[in-house]
Amino acid sequence: MYTQLSDEQQFIQQTAQRFATDELLPFAHLLDKEQLDQGQSNPEQGRAKLLENLSKLADLGFMGLDISSEYGGTEAFSVALTELGRGCASTAVPVSVTNMVAEVIKACGTESQRQNCLPKLCSGDFAVGGLCLTESTAGSDPSGMRCRAVKQGENWLLNGSKLYITSAEYAGLFVVWALTDPEAPKGKGISCFLVPADTPGLSIGKAEQKMGQRGSSTNEVLFEDCCIPADAILGTENQGFKIAVSQLAGGRIGVGSFALGIGLAAMDFAREYIV
Ligand SMILES: Cc1cc2nc3c(=O)[nH]c(=O)nc-3n(C[C@H](O)[C@H](O)[C@H](O)COP(=O)(O)OP(=O)(O)OC[C@H]3O[C@@H](n4cnc5c(N)ncnc54)[C@H](O)[C@@H]3O)c2cc1C
Image 1: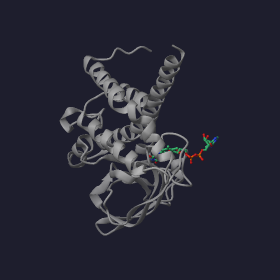
Image 2: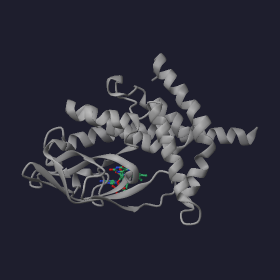
Image 3: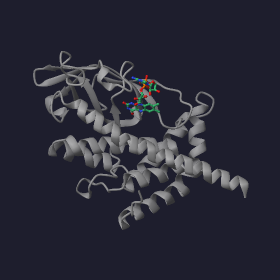
Image 4: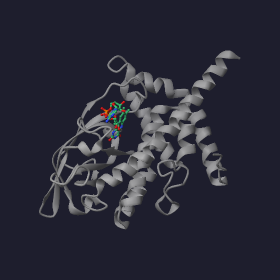
């Protein structure tokens, strides 16, 4: 199906293309190599460059690509991610996840949660957002999760761990899924929470070594009696699995879009090699 881009989407696409060519592409290989050489060269340099890229992209409005201008966003997720992926996959991944975080808050949050979180995500006040769904026992089938949230007075206590979390090291805010009714049928007792990264009891665990996108960090996130207020719940109690499923759909668009960008970059390199 051919979709005609609006003038605004074309403008965003061209802006992304220019940024990817001028700011991402010249440093993409260095950023990736810094991580590959961890221990031998200076990984801090790669991390600083990634954070600089993300900050500039927030200034350009790329952290709220499907968020209306009312909350500080624009509206063109897929075309922008394709262009960013073409320049630097390690930068495109956290942009994609941050947009997913913004999207879930827009779709399921209360007006107060939107007002509190979206401007910080879109403006880069939070360097990035993180999504905590996957666990060692819950990957393709997230309903198998074990991370628990238990009500304690006015609060929730989170305990458990999440695996493979993109940008966990520098995320300002996490969307976290946890079991709130372990007796309920599979997938029916899960809730979704907003957890600021500086909440006591939340810590960042081991970093994964990956075969690609090495400039984008992927870590374990640990919760140990992590206390969050009652109003940190996103959407309705025990209905969080529906949010996870809809998020995975959005995530696939992001991954597909920057994967297309990586493919286009491979063609660019091949063309340059041939001529
Ligand atoms: C770079 C990277 C970044 C990530 N970032 C995040 C993040 O930010 N937040 C987050 O929550 N998660 C993240 N993930 C986790 C990702 O969502 C999971 O890796 C994914 O859901 C698959 O889970 P798994 O790795 O446990 O694989 P598994 O579920 O163990 O699957 C392994 C293989 O088995 C196949 N398989 C699984 N079940 C079946 C079945 N019933 N029948 C037939 N085949 C099956 C799968 O298709 C796959 O090929 C990230 C992963 C990577 C690699």
